[in-house]
Each structure stands twice: as structure tokens, then as C-alpha cells.
Image (cartoon, rainbow, N blue to C red):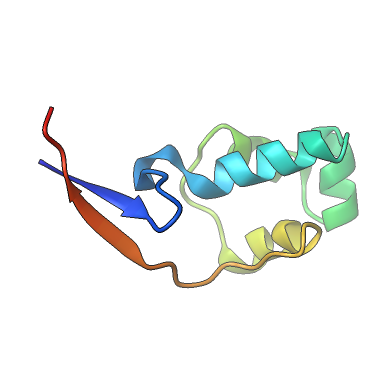
Length: 84
């Protein structure tokens, strides 16, 4: 079985966006509500992202990522053999 990895080594299934937003929000000392207000998105949207909901709009996620100096874009994936 093959795993799909990003260049930073995180598995694709670990939901990189979810982890980035949650970690960045906590690092900045923001609550989910504060982040939603600053980004101009709904609180439910932030909660859905952090719970790993996989269907969201790129333009809306970019509103949140913009607060952390990021944007969505193509990321090169590396296939790695899983020897387990």
C-alpha cells in the first residue's frame, strides 16, 4: 500500500489545512469565534474545518489562511511505500 505524503512529510489524510488552522489559531491565542470574526467567515465554518470536514470552498478557506499569511495552492505530493 502506498501513502501519499506532502513535501513536509505529513500524510495527506492528516488534513494539513485543519492542523495548520487549528495550530495557528491557538498560537495566536484566538478562540474559534475570534478567528471567524477576523476572517469574515461563520463560526460554524471554523468549527467544521477544525473537525476535519472535507467539503469547503477554496475562496472561503483562503479568507482564513490569509490571516496567517498563507493561501491554498498546488502542493507536490510524494508517493512512499508503506512497509507495514
